[in-house]
Length: 137
Image 1: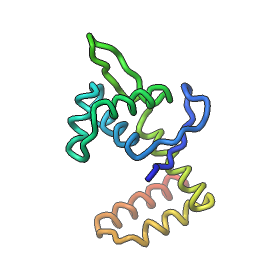
Image 2: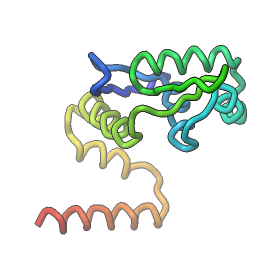
Image 3: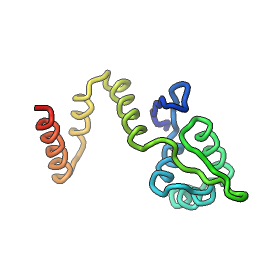
Image 4: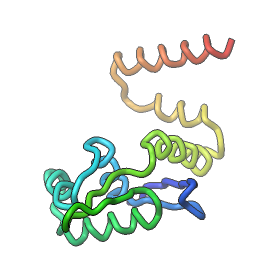
């Protein structure tokens, strides 16, 4: 499954799509900061086992696209995210609303509310909506 993540940034000439695995590797970098290929592999191995060369290839592609940056310490390449998680989230949700819900944000919310939610989740959503209403008044 490919994540529909469209990005435009200062280092990017055109929109980019990220696979689920690329997003997961970015997520590991957001959670842990700067890591070597082996450190990313060790974390990812808890979910799925991939060769270090596969992870290195993905990181190199992410670097070429401007999503990560690296520094070299001795013989090790140390990678870190070059884009904020909030930016990826915002553009991903915008793309989702545009492509699946024809720009209708209320349709997305309606779809989410149709899912099984706990009372705590519903109360949290209700609080967020009330805050948004209060801020728009």
